[in-house]
Amino acid sequence: MKDFMFVFRNDPSTLADRSPEEMQASMQKWMDWIGGIAAQGKLIDRGNRLNPAGKVVKPLLTITDGPYIETKESVGGYTMVRAESLDEAAEMAKGCPILLFGGNVEVREIDRM
Amino acid sequence: MSGFAGFMIFLKKIKLLSSMAPAIRQQALKLKPYITMKDFLFVFRNDPAVMAGMSPEELQTSMKKWMDWIGGIAAQGKLVDRGNQLANEGNVVRPAKVVTDGPYIETKESVGGFIMVRAESLGEATEMAKGCPILSAGGNVEVRPIIRM
Image (cartoon, rainbow over all chains, first blue to last red):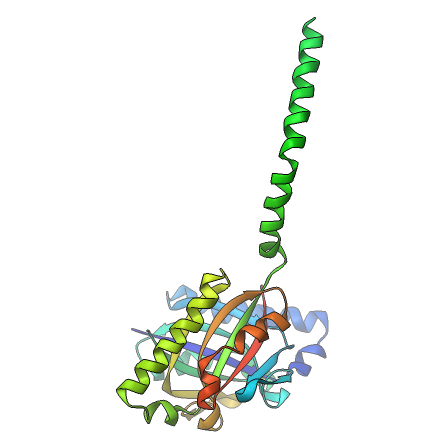
């Protein structure tokens, strides 16, 4: 088994527009999805959500405010899972609720140092 | 008489406590950063071709610079998670469950790894990121506050 990182990208404004009921329904979907991965013993680190605020430090120590690139594809969080292969990890990512809200999941194998 | 003795003990306790006050205060000040500090994720982006083009000596020098930088953060007690490097290959799963091969967007700004640090503010975390060796190889560091769930 190998370890993989799921990088979640979405448009932060879609979250801001939601009603408390929608937020709760969405949270429930996330918990179900992550709970399902955990139930298979394949969740390594449930990860974290990232605050939309942020800065980017570039060569020559230039600093730009705000998260990276277009806000429509800002990194919103990450999770770490265990799978046999990149394909199996990508299959697991297909259940992620972010896909229902126009977001996407990047699946990357971890190089242990 | 026993009431008086009790009172004297009480007075001694007060005296002992007040003599300890500066030490307690000092301890509280030492702990303050751990109470007020926040966690931040550093997301490293670079062109994977830069690393692939390095000689073994260059790789070793680069690794040493990373270790020095991360070691410096750890020495201040501000390293929460040394994170991981990500392999170059990868997939992106999009809505309608379309899977595309390869890491995200242009390979010149692919996510190469991450670490987690602790700092008083986004400004302090950003200052810490300025020491990252990726900056001398054309890469960049995104600094993001963590939302604990």
